[in-house]
Length: 211
Image 1 (cartoon, helix red, strand yellow):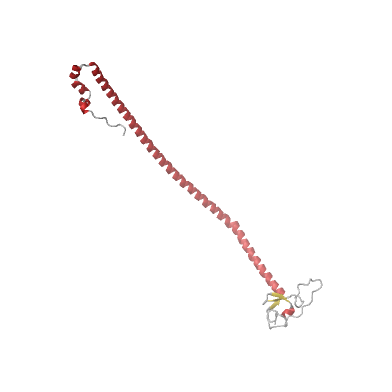
Image 2: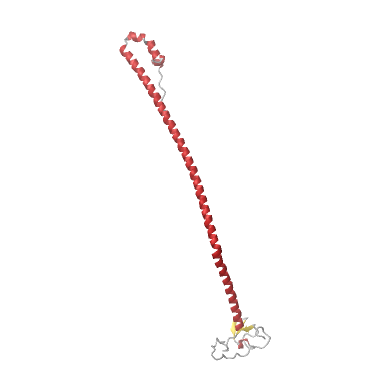
C-alpha cells in the first residue's frame, strides 16, 4: 500500500538512523525505531515496522508524521487567525459601538430624569395652587365667622343697652311715683316700653343665643 492507503504501493522500509548532530526523537517501545509515521486509524505515531506488513497497523491508513504535523500546524494557524479575527471584531465593537450605546444610555437616562422632574414640578405646582385655594377658602370662612360674631356682639350690646335703659327708667318710676301716680301712668309706661310685652302674664323667655 501507499503511505496513505492500505494495499497499495511499497511498505515503509527500515528507517535510517539519525544524522550526525541530530537529536534522536522518541522511539517505538516495541521495535526501537523512530516514530516517523502516523496511524490515522489509531490516531497515534508509529514506526516503520508497526506500519509494515507484519506490524500492528497493517491495513490501517498510514501517513508520514511530518505531514500530520504540518496539517495540525495549518489547523492551528487557521484557529489563530479566527481567534485574531474575533479579537479584532470585539476590539472594534468595544471601541466603536459601546461608546455610542453608553452615550445613548446616558441621554435616555437624562431625558427620563428631566421628564420625572417636570412631572414632579407640575404636581407640586398643582398641589401648591390647590393648597392656596383651600387656604383662601378657609381664611374667607374664618373672616365671615369673625364678622358674624362682631355683628352679633354689636347687636346684643345694643339690646343690652336698651334693656338697661328701660330697666333704669322703670326703677326710677318705682322709686319716685306713688301708687296713684303709678296707676295713672300705666298706659304711658307700657306704651313707652313695649306695650303689653312687659306684662307678667305675657312675658316670654328670650331665644337662646348660643345653641
